Length: 278
Image (cartoon, rainbow, N blue to C red; front, side, top):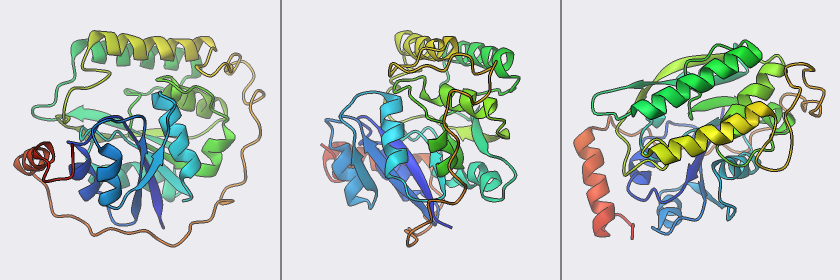
């Protein structure tokens, strides 16, 4: 089975080679360039990824553009900053492929050298608490690595196009009665500075976007109000499972185990221009 992997991207030239070279067999990367100025789109294309241009800025806008470009029955999402290892995607996609879960989130487990600032952890915990109160879904992390069926996700009618997109996905899924699960994935030192958790301002902006979703105001003028009171009544019926058949499998060789020095060497090559970056 082919699985599509949506990677929202904004200036990730240093990280993309490491990420794309570790993509598992049968997982097709879809890099959604959200206005990069460092050659990220060109690097992704040279490394064999499907590149989608999304000029409208916003994490949700990039995620949704990738979802629309995907064709596989199962679709995954993950960050393109090398903070998550693509080789662990099967942990997240597996329960969806086997039919054991409808939506699986990767719970980030910080490894050696991984920086998860206190303000980011507190913001994540607060959102988890709000989510549990709202839906009863007890998740320890609203993580960026996740997997679900593409047709069902389209049927949720997500409208937020900012940082509220991941939370709106969980809210609507919970109110549709989806089986939501989480599994641990390694959280690694990212390449470059995080645009969200790297600053208090970035984290505050993300939390503010997600609080709007919790209140029922999405970033695209839509509404998710009343979801916990009237499940699914404000969204169209989900398309039948399997209505988007897979096309010919897009495969890439399974790379050898990577190491931190290897990732640093890749970053140095990109920075110097030998790896295709600018």
